[in-house]
Amino acid sequence: MANWELKGCCQQDQKAFLITICIYAVVILA
Image (tube, rainbow, N blue to C red; front, side, top):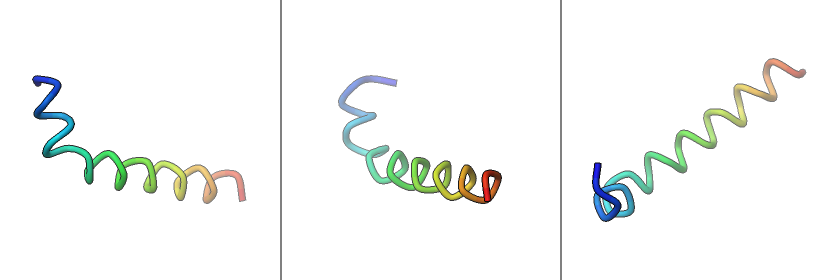
């Protein structure tokens, strides 16, 4: 994937991905 594609269409996906990872980590560590 090109850089501009990542910046354009995947920005929201990256945020959702990070949030999911954080929740997942909290659930495992809790």
